Image 1 (cartoon, rainbow, N blue to C red):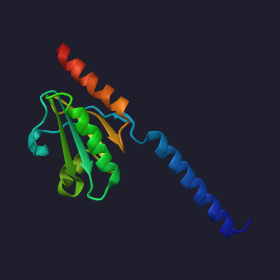
Image 2 (image 1 turned 60 degrees about the vertical axis):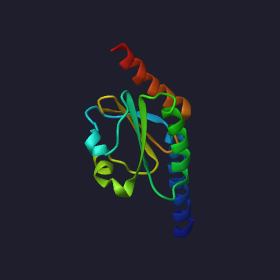
Image 3 (image 1 turned 30 degrees about the horizontal axis):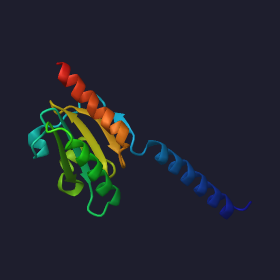
Image 4 (image 1 turned 90 degrees about the vertical axis):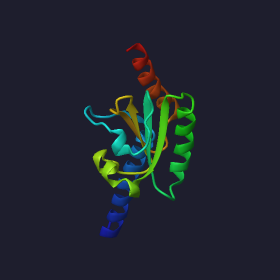
Length: 142
């Protein structure tokens, strides 16, 4: 094999590994590190009494539109849950604070504004529903 062929094989291998990892992790609900929180002043929008979804989007992002629909439908199932869709370019301080690296990214906050979980990519509906149910169940017992 000459150098050109080796480069092509290497690029294909790296692309395959990246793609398989992205497929495995995209839309998965991940617990967020403790200590991160968002205040209503930082958000600039009303927060839900029990939970808030913050969705970070960009203007021409088709997965962002799909995510918006999924999260909005779930948030509307409870009047105490809010959904705030933010354009990343307009909220760079919050993007940096929460280490948002891509759109769509959805962050789930509890009633005190603590970050409970985050989802990069289009959320898996069942996992998103379970994450919200945990917050609502926990706060219902308090």
